[in-house]
Length: 344
Image (cartoon, rainbow, N blue to C red; front, side, top):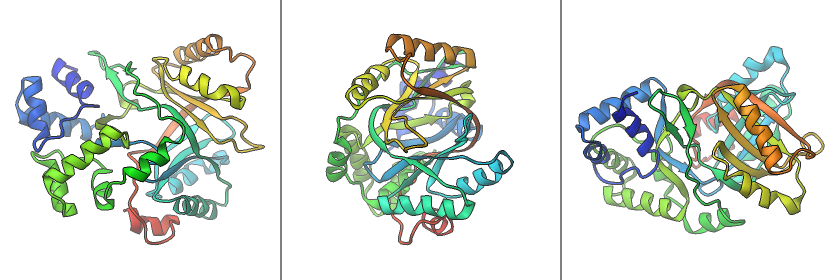
C-alpha cells in the first residue's frame, strides 16, 4: 500500500470533507488529482477493503438496535445464518465459538419494529433468539490505522463515551429527516458531487444536506462520517468478543478504563439475559493472530483485576454479513419478508 493509499484510508475515516466536492478536497489535501481519489475509492469498494463512505450513527439515536444471539445446531448453521442475513434489518452476522454460535445485530426505527424482526426470525427458524440491548457505550467506533505493509492496528484516538441517558437526549433533539437517513445510511456515491445526488433523492438542497449531516456530527448523533473499512480485509482475522459478569457498582468505572486500552475496539454495557447469559460488560479485540489477542485478554484481566470475575472469550468464525445499519421508517411489521419491501 503506497503512501497516498494509506493516507486516503487513514485520514478520512473521520474528518471527511463536508463540501459540495469532497473528493476534490481530499485530492488537494493529498496532492493528487480528484480522478485518482475516485479511482482508488472505487477500487477499495470493489475489492471489499471499504464497506462504505458515510455515517456511523451513535446507537439508539436515529432508531433502536440490539445484539442478538442464537444457539444453532451445527448442521443448520449455514441455513439459519442465510435466513438471518436475508433480513434487511440485520447488518452484522457472525459465527462465534460458543454454544451461542450465531451473533447478529438488528436495527429498526422503533422498539416494536425491532421486536417484530426478532419474532419473525424465531418464527422462520424455529429457534429462540437471545436479545441483549445496549445500556451504555464506553467506546464504539471501529476506526483503524493502516500500516504501509497493509496490516491494521486499532486507532489510538478515543472519542468521548456517551454519558448515561445521552441517547435519549440526542434522539429528542437530533432527528434527521427520514428520507435523509435512508439516503445516507448505505453510503455516499463515489461521484464528483455526492451530496447533490442525495439532495435530488430527498428534495432537500445540497446545502441543507451538508449542514444537517455536519450538525449531527457535532452533536454526536453521527459518531463519525467518512470511510468505513472492513477489518478482515486489512488483516484482522483473530477477533474476540470478551464478556464479564460485573456488579453494578463496578461496571461503569471498569468499562471506561477498559475502553482506553489501544487494542480494545468496542466496549459497552448490555442487558443480561438470565439465566442463559449473565454477562453485562462486553469488549471487542480485533487482532491479526489468536495468540496476540489472548495475551491482550490476559493483560486486561491482570490490569483491571478481572481474574476472579466470571467471563468468557468468544472468537469470531465466519462472517455471514457486514454492512452499515439501515433505519428506514417501516410501514408494516418487520418480519423478514415484509422488511424486504421496507428496507430493500
